[in-house]
Image 1 (cartoon, rainbow, N blue to C red):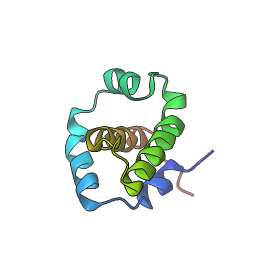
Image 2: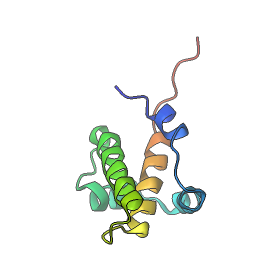
Image 3: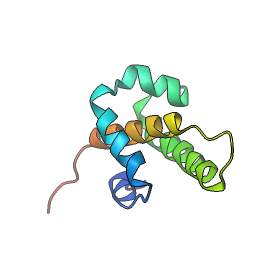
Image 4: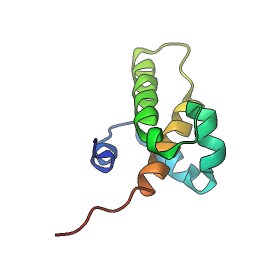
Length: 93
């Protein structure tokens, strides 16, 4: 399984996108937002799907494609951050 905490910590995106996503974390509602973003509210499938969709959105942003939606990108980043926060902490040895 992917270590989503490490992946998120190593994520390199424009500072404004990350700041906007952090600001939106307080309004994140899993039941509402997951279904709208990825079509499911199942927690075990959420992170891989969110990660895949965010990578696709980043590729669209980098190519300058007109279909890029900054609002959707921020929503995906909010969901990723919130879902990673819900993961159980690894055991300290």
